[in-house]
Amino acid sequence: MKKRNPAIDRMRSIGIILVIAAHCGFPDLFQRIRDFDVVLLMFCSGMAFGLSVHPSEKPIAYIWRRFKRLVFPVWKFLVFFFVFFAISGRFFSLSEMAESFLLLAGGILFVWVYRVFFTSSLCNPFLKEFAQKPFKEVLAVSLILLIVNDVLYLQFFSGSGMIGKLLSYLITYSVGYAVVSMLGIASDQWDTSKRLIAAGVFGIIFFGFLICTRSADLYAYKYPPLLYYLSYGILWSEVLSCLLEKGKASAVTEWFSMHAMDIFLWHIFGYYLMDTFNPAMLDQMWLCFFALLGTGIAGASLQEQVQRIWKTRKQK
Image (cartoon, rainbow, N blue to C red; front, side, top):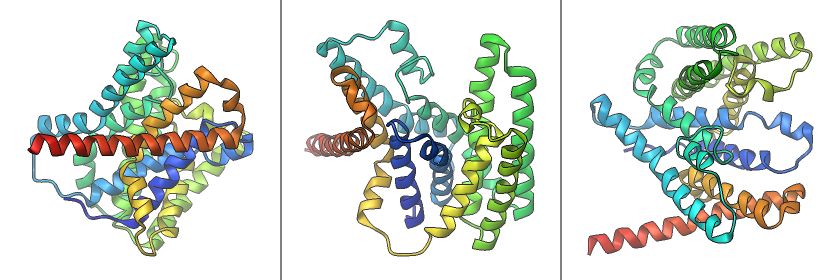
């Protein structure tokens, strides 16, 4: 069972909308500002996990449960995706399809997010216990882990060919986003003053990098996620968790939050529909944005209806 936190629903809804906006032709300044979306989603994932109540289970059982929750839906979507476009006359190479199912960067666009959510979520049971520790300890260990993660990547993984790339997938991505998830778990237990202090600490780190790198593009530190990029996302996540914690729950944001990852999948379908049949639409930012958002919502709604009908028939 899981208690609902309206702030998580609002933050996750914002995160998904910003991710969709990232794939439209919005001005560069907006794209720079909104580049905390994936971190925000991972932060929300941590907050939600912190509220969840599961009976104790063996590690293998937990891994299998997360695999079914995060990877199976993507595989089902990819089967439909590749069959649909093959019938439509657009074919993908075997390597593109294989890397898509492996959730790697060489596959279709954007599915890599699910790999990150899966690998990082495997750390959550251990992180949840540590997140109960005192505020200063959690904050200090988070910073140490992120710094060590940066050093490992920059000194050993970067430029080391396929082995380095594999290690960055397994370690740099997983550790970086796992720390974000842990901060989400911990933040839900902190009061507003502690969350603002955490935001201030990561804000100082971000602006320090900003000055030292002469306003280097965050995108260059996103794949894999390094401290410069993550500090910006954590700053926004902590601030939004303070701003959005009050107010009544909304059925709209609750539905949007519950179906966020399905909306994300179906917006990918919408993106490739436009790319295949009318590429010019991708350059018209508002038309592209509402088309992708609409496709995501319609696809998630239709999927929900199909699953409901299937479940009803199985029960008969």
